[in-house]
Image (tube, rainbow, N blue to C red; front, side):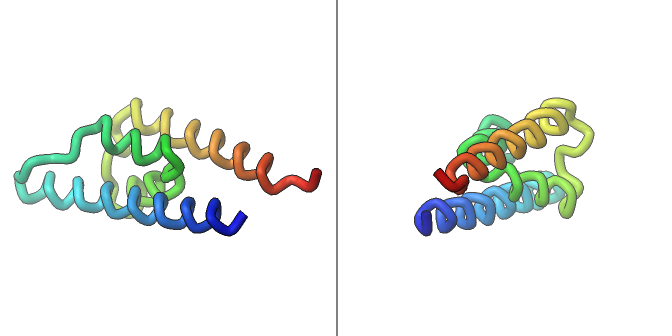
Length: 88
């Protein structure tokens, strides 16, 4: 189970950083990170980091696509983790 925990820590940290970077790029008028990439980071396990990034950086909080998909992905990953760590 250690590799799974390590993976979730890394992917959530990466998602958090990606959301922060995209907000920074938006403020500076620089080239943005595609929304597909932001959602993908959440879908592959970084939903909690993505949600934290949305709240802390106040980024993508007015977009229904993100306000719905990120919490749904959080629930999915929480369910997957609960299943993996359940006693047999």
